[in-house]
Image (tube, rainbow, N blue to C red):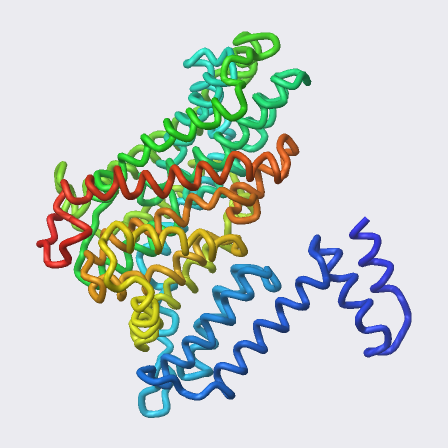
Length: 522
């Protein structure tokens, strides 16, 4: 119907400005969005930009560059929240605005192009691109589906509880190869939906479907993403910020720091099991249905074996790089390994895919978003904006104990996240502020930034807070109310887990939250 609206309107006669609102609104509606919210968001973003840049007096303690960067940050935030422009377009526009506003200082009347676009030359961006393309190859070969069904078959998924644990294993395996929780959720959507529909339509079976979809496509995707450096794009933003301050974290170091988060899935599963009371509900047709779906895929093809070997080899190269606590095989940055991986994927005759097939399944918008986000975090630090904002927030928490400061910041993060969809964008805004704020309140910058930024990933109150949840909601198995009733307790679990489990774990590894002077152990 959207196509018909757009086509009929394109063909409609009229002058350039005649019935302009109808023309604009029809085009926005044809793109699947609401005209009023999109236009309002677009207008507010530019209004905020102009007011900060041209009307607002220069605040005490903030440089002109910091004020210009603040205008860009507000513009990007409103664009991301309202989705008035695609997130990738917003991402690539950030360097442009930083140049035009001189948020990054010019040298001899020459714009700082290298600095403005540094986010797009950062090694983690190319690592991300390799992971996106590897995920595209997985989808084209249907190897992702094979892995999922093989694990469900192996665990003999006969009831809702076993299905959830099976998909948890699937998420953990795919996290090694598929970056971004939303990419894994999109990859698993049809499989999870198919398995969920094996359950009938009684009250208990409907509850089982809700539990399976929420845990498998949202909670599992997010929690597994916390553990593998390349599996969650906010991880790469944090690694970049820490690395610039000489807090280097390798692929294995990240895993060691974050692996206890896997235990959080146990707690969320216990909660959802109690909440939906559906863990023991059996699959209609039993394990045989899952086994049949797996068997119908037949034996693995040569191309599938090749891709699996390449991906395992890539994962080993990531793990055995410079500073590896296991064994240092090479000294190449992760981004270089990613680019080598891309070259190997496209060796002629290795795989039967055209470039168009691969590019259609590569998440270019998120790639551009990550590059823009990295540029913005760097500009916030360089211009002094992050330090200025951190000083302002400091007044709200100064004098409190370390755990109270952490709790206030975690709760505040969840309040801010109610209206924001992109986890990547949220962490891009928060991380430089948190990193600058930590020394001001006597906390370790890495531990503090990670703990608060990590809780941002557990924004489980509304489906619109996380792209993976939007994907899961689209399957139609649960309502917004279902999600919120389960989610608010899951948010509390996430906050408590960060304070009670992760904080002591970081201290055990030599990164105590309460000691900013502790020597870096990695």
